[in-house]
Picture 1: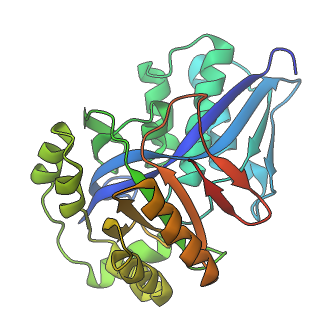
Picture 2: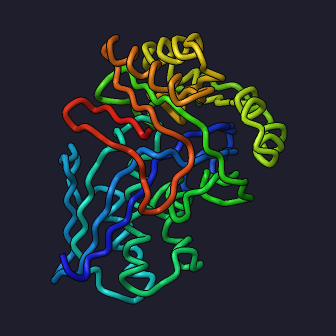
Picture 3: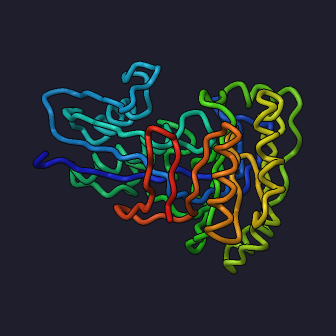
Length: 305
């Protein structure tokens, strides 16, 4: 595949998600979001072609033309005064509709790959503006590192030192949940967001125990209301040996557990799979092109260690 650009993208978890009732002109809620990359990765390959095409493996339920990857390619080409003559192939390992940012990760990775192909810096203001138009979390995936995001989760306010902690990701069911439905449920009965200053201080100090003690997600009650089993997973994870803290990420349905050790993460995931849940033992943090994840499509399981 001469001339192809291959980009690996992690997923994310929200250590803090504070949703406000106010919405912007796009209809997005204002949020305070502290995100960290997690080493469960999709792979995006881009190469020149006569016309734009997008392919996912395994294939998605929606048409390629309705995906964030397609939108990202069209909008970036438009912003740079180019034709979107590229073929984009996405190998998917990040589960959909899980709160892990899979579709945003793919769009962000496609933008990064196109920037390399077209000789543009990923943090060029034109590129960042495109990422914000594509979706709320896409800007995070232009340069995935721990950060505090405001706006709709698309405006970087500050970054934090790299954080590498063993983590267990557990999902209760194959089909995932609906972000739109979760926010609608939040509009009906959502609580005010909590503060994040203590979490930011803990991240600055690389104090994993304090980070674990300061997890927050005021969208989680909506996720539990829509999928009670996600609450069961969250509570179950909190009771596993060696788990420092556990929380639903984003709008669900996936929960994550920060763990004391690799062994604790692997043990929690092994037990979760025996219960019929999908589970991945991996870590927070990620280096471009150096994902450690060994992924099994047959089982939907991975171990990064």
